[in-house]
Amino acid sequence: MTTYTVHDKTWCLGCTNFSLLESARQSFQELIDESKGALKKEDFVLCAGIGCHGKIHDYYEMSSIYGLHGRDLATAFGVKVGNPNLKVVSFSGDGNAFDEGMEHFVHAIRYNMDMTLIVHDNNLLSLTTGQPTATAWKGLRNRTAYGVSSDPFNPVSMAISLGCGFVARTYAVDVQDTKRIIKEAIKHKGFSYVEVVQPCVFFLDTREYFTKNLYKIDETTKMDKTIALQKATEWNYEHEDKKIPYGIFYQREKGTFEEAEPQLKSLLDKKIAWWNLKRSFSYDRFVKQEN
Ligand SMILES: Cc1ncc(C[n+]2csc(CCOP(=O)(O)OP(=O)(O)O)c2C)c(N)n1
Ligand code: SF4
Ligand SMILES: [Mg+2]
Image (cartoon, rainbow, N blue to C red; front, side, top):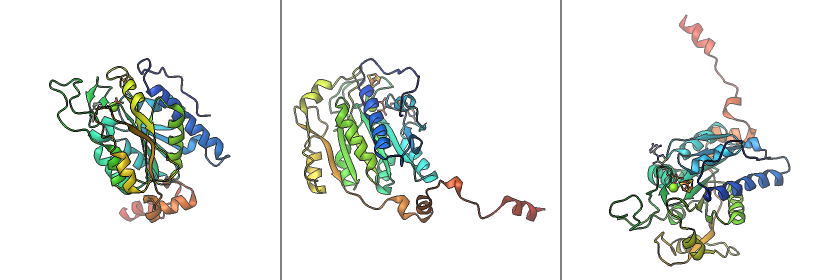
């Protein structure tokens, strides 16, 4: 069972990270149950950045590892190189993913390693008391003298333009849909990006704004890249009364990094990790030569 640890949850009362915590737990559990023994809790490794979001992995009884701030994807990459058979899920904040760790976001899409990135987007560096991030809207005053002076950055449209094979947005308050989308993302072969609109109820409570404006994408017909991009730019993170689409924007499978790299491919084929390989050399030989 993917149960919670005994650690006290130190998020603020009412934080939307609580509902995301439950959505992701249900996703892991259902994937394990539906696999009928093929997938176990031990097959998952969770990574996280530094921030309120990062605490999420402290609360699951599952293997997990913190990266530095902005480096959760680099850590996830390392885990996959060690054992490409693992299901790696990385939890990141918006500051973590799009400010300090932007280069990892871009290259993770380019590499297309089979792993999932879940970004808790609260438009803030919440743990450090609410400074605006790259997804914060122009004019937002939080912790700034004159307000944010630049236009916000749209990670959903960027992910689609860069060729990410799975791009979705969900709303932390909608527990069932968030669970469904995280499950789909983990099932997707290749790099999957899930943006979770995750209002920070303490420093910037945007629940009313998002509850009013979010609407579900019609997913009955898959969007091609051009249509998905149009959909993704219906809302560009500005704080206006605009309809905001959520759901799966784009989904296409393509070859992964680990399939293309012969050494990783052989680990995949043999279903083993790097450390299970028999070494073809022995240190003894070198020691003897030196003597
Ligand atoms: C390399 C480095 N830079 C900066 C920090 C300080 N720091 C810790 S958490 C944080 C903000 C995290 O923001 P975000 O990733 O959006 O997560 P949230 O707290 O909003 O969930 C910052 C700037 C750090 N710990 N390490
Ligand atoms: S500061 Fe915001 S994001 Fe962090 S725990 Fe509190 S409500 Fe949640
Ligand atoms: Mg944040």
